[in-house]
Length: 88
Image (cartoon, rainbow, N blue to C red; front, side):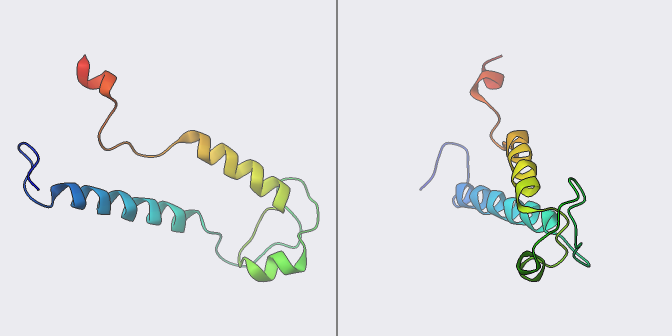
């Protein structure tokens, strides 16, 4: 389906690129290396099951939840920009 000046398939390519970027961001945030026995933020012990399940883990569950909420608040990439910026 043609959409204005865009060539066929351009919308799907944009969607695919957005998904690939999200996957890369998620992979880059995965812990790597040796797991810590104690949380680097609060010092509490990281349960052995968590250390086994998440190689390279550095935070306990509570501190990881805080970190995740802060990361989500930062937002992602908006390829299309906001409508407000297009109207200016």
